[in-house]
Image (tube, rainbow, N blue to C red):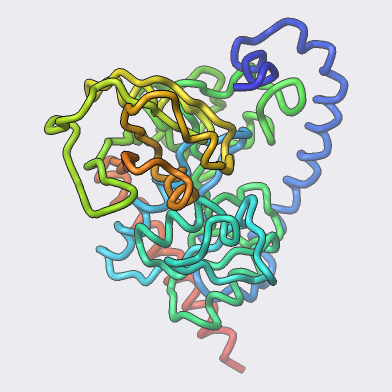
Length: 346
């Protein structure tokens, strides 16, 4: 965590010197928010419901596990979902770009590559999310789109918005950039359909919400070896319990705490979110095993040591939330169908 991030979440008093810049930033994003109301009612050329999974703070909050969980629940309910993303850090040859299971992470972005490898879902990246949506729908018969991030991408129409908050870190000092970690003021959460709390605690500073926040728990899965087919549950691990723990995610401490809860003694190696790796960064002075996040694994196939393991996580959600979410989505789909049929009447 950078010194600025530590200041945000420890509510350092010196951040007050940044208040004028923060106030200007807040005014600008509030102006952009007004577009949202317009995009909700104007004619649109994306013919399927769009579900936004985003956040209002910089850094990771747990969006990707939630996207994967929603894909699985949508499929169980009979939907054919597709995913669109900016593709943070991706260097595609051209956009829109279709991410496939064999797409290198540096070309498709670490999170899009992870989502595709886990689910096989059609996924297109483009800084212009509307362009990505049109390209995906032209190539695949999807009946719902999930936007991985995009809460602030107001050019993209949206039917359901979910905002994810890290329950451990919350909203920091509750201020917008650069005084605080927020991309939009806390009041923005009152406008979304669902606030999803990643972790057991509901943080302070939340405005009055449309619904009670949804709690999401990230449960560790079975460890798998990065190079090979070996798989083992943490409780059946036969190797050293002291391991090198590598995490280039928004909140590496959460990963290290998970390893400790599983009985490991992690030697912590935190990296910036979306970090790229060289073999030298993953070469240590002892033969201890390495355990990394699944997000890091998509970038380390050729650079990690032989004894490297991956710990995936699964998002667990309240079944009542899933039922209500699916009912809301069905209503959106039916309304879009009615509007489409009505437009044909002359």
